[in-house]
Image 1 (cartoon, helix red, strand yellow):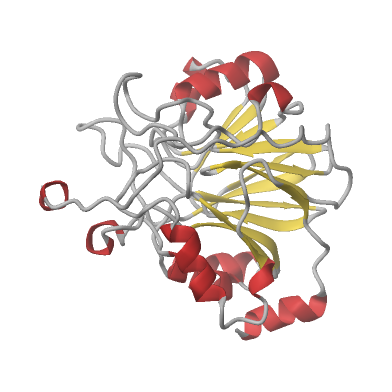
Image 2: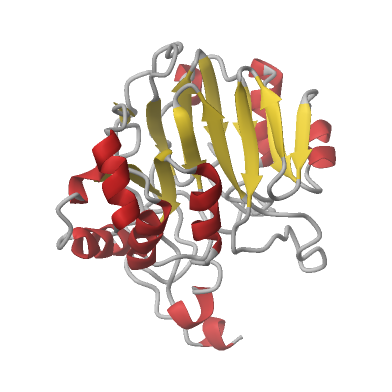
Length: 302
């Protein structure tokens, strides 16, 4: 109530016009790694001939109803029709901007991918049409398609309505395979668990870290990192390359549309490796370089 009664929401354009990115390749072989930022927390990961989507959302709104609630301020960076074959979907938790039923239902119908989720979400995923569902607790893992997928802790919560808070689990993911260890932090506040993720999965090749929906910090701090904390998390993880996620699409808190990016750019100014923390544009895809052992070692010295 204190937050709602005293909100000072930073400016967001009503609509941000953008062109869709180029269709991603059909697949990426071997230990090569290609990352495409759709927007928000939706990322296409391609390696070992596999295509995986994180927290896919193509809907206009992320709410219980279609006529109210948080609405997109920009299109997804990749058109749904331009997606390659999707082999797997990683779900972090059940909030509407991460567990989007219309998108998931369409993915199940058109691609029939495997689904990976924290505890409590297998039943709703099966109801949406997913046949191959893997439900995991923190620090548990499953072998699939030549990679191992690990569910890891996050500092967040779950809810779809007023009476189901924390009835299902939330978390991040580490994908381990020929390309190395790839970390998707999903939606999280800052916590000591980053150190444990680093200790268990070192060396990490790539980390996807959220930077938005942190204002007001006295209220949002426990569940959403600030951009400065994302940089600190990057240091703790020791990953040579990182990417910002969870910004610029939905106005979910009080930070302005450009604020997360501007604060992240400021936080990176003093770092000689600032260019290694990628601030993507929706639809942008990159081949992630093979890690240099010297860069990995420097990461753990930070």
